[in-house]
Image (cartoon, rainbow, N blue to C red; front, side):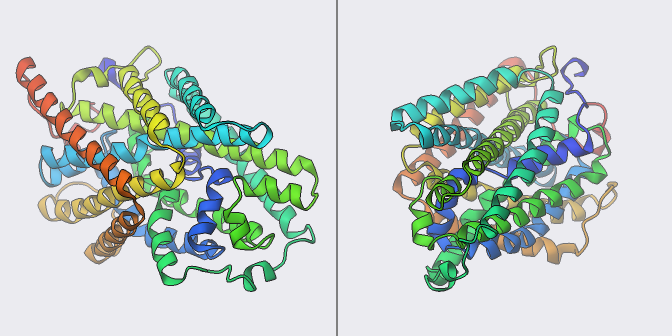
Length: 453
């Protein structure tokens, strides 16, 4: 196993940059969907949703400190229940992570489309080229991802704050654009319900932190701080940006735009450099998200291989410490989603990912409760406060996310989700046959295995 170990090259700040940077996705192209769903009221919903997700974050913090393996949800669920349940949870985790890179790749095409009109086919080709570029880079040392994340994360936050502040100070920002046009929650309770479910995707990324634990050079007991940072840093930034845009025009007009920030800058004759900065910042958002979720997706496959749930080839690392064949699979899935996402790609991927996330969050909260009962003797470097009540709240929030996302998904989305479930069953059956042929059994990693993998 020693030759297949991941390299511990990520610092505390780098893991925060990767996880928070992954959460802060590309509102450059997604903001119209925010306003279409619930108007400027999203500014209040994002912080509230971050707060509601804290119980889930605490569950991830306790579990990752106790069982610090790249397999994360898989290991936790295997210990709480069995290998089959662990694999099923890991397959959902893989879905959450693997759909994000192609989603972000489309944002590169959206940025180009602002300057030079592109057809849907050209947008798809640019997305495919983007994921191909990162596939090449993903096979170098993880420290490359860490350094790029640090640079992009801090730069994009600073630029985003500058652009949004310029809106407030432009002389064109008016609260009347919100007040007189039902800008706060124009679709009422239904819009709030849907938004609170599907906007959870804007926080997907905090759960990827445990998949990096075998590459972090600091104690796993500190991961909970990274997880909560990945909830509240994005929430505050989202809130500020939404209010900045919401006061510049009625919500319906923003919902009809392709990239609100540059279009608002052009409409009011603001300095063109702001539009360039907004686009540059948006591309940084997209790139950090693509990097983070790609890395996590590959670690999910690596972790399943650790447990012999997938062939051992997914655990093999190259000379830079990267799981090459896991990266190949992520690349193929990314190309698939680039090709089949279609015109309504933002709404489509939002809903599918939110359903999978709700399932993973629910099971993780169950895992904490069950493992506290089954193994009270296990050392817990971080123990989440609040007891089972907190995790019960996390389960309720998870169910809410699943129901809301299901209401937003169209027929094609259900078909795609069903196909992904079916593919998971096929992969599980294939892996079972492979194990029989090779003569090895599935494993369950416990705290006794920490440092030996």
